[in-house]
Length: 398
Image 1 (cartoon, rainbow, N blue to C red):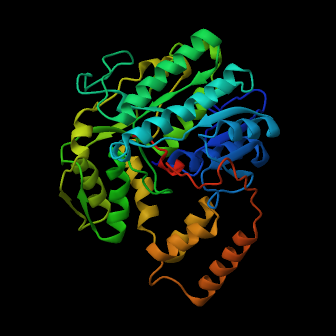
Image 2 (cartoon, one colour):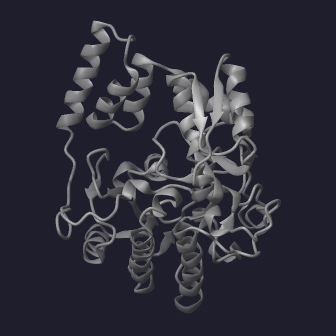
Image 3 (cartoon, rainbow, N blue to C red):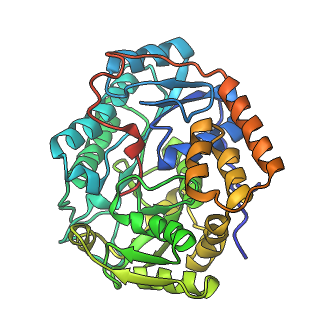
């Protein structure tokens, strides 16, 4: 059976005081689903979504350059925000093409939030790390919490550095900052964002579109992965845990499932007869070869009760049908989870052929008009977007 998607009474986060929350990088792979879950739990008015572009966000939201400390600080003070999820980052594959910009983006955005917490403006901070913080001399099977860490990408270097800075701010200033080393994250709801593990998202889209996929990683490249719902649940479970129960102040290992491109393709082919995969490894192969194959997350299980729900079979059975949908149903999913007219246009371009009647088209047009009328607060911060050295949508796992 596919796991229960709800938190359930036994695992529902207990946040205590209902702090107002800001999610930076809300338009990215993690942010999109994190905002939705936070709003479901705390109420829509309690969760602000921020990204460099706000056209795909829903109110309360803001167009905000997360590297602009003055603008971020002003929003936090004005809205009485006490908790920040800082998700902005440039991922591994993209970061290798522009390492200086990746380093500046990944580190500057972290320090802005840590410094606000140090000054007492924030009660709690979440910042994600990644398996990219490991390296070629890290044990690849059963990678422990404490081990050799020698990352080979600027993304990984920034994540390892960030972990140590989080620990430093915790030890020196008492900042309550929490972190997870995300494995590759898989979700059908948002497109991939430039990471080495993105093949595990691309493959579902290609299966729907073409019935065939060319993997940029070799057939036997095993990597740790996690369904996005597990990742969101782990994030909120960690943030709800009592401070005194947490013994890791860098970033917690978290694990769910590991597989190879060949194994994932075989699982998809069982449900989509005729699906085929080819292999054309590129520069991302060397990155993947430096990462762990399987993670030991004993500390997370011990300290805050972590346990995943999705194995490979459940993952494919859950995500496969969503990506196999065409026409009206697929667009309905896009609207339910994104709600903005720009997403409707993208969905119309990519998946609407041959599936609509006149009534459906009229309904879609009406929904488009409703989305267009939706009022979204837009704060033009800093230099009003002229100096755009990054895209906050790059946020993601690895």
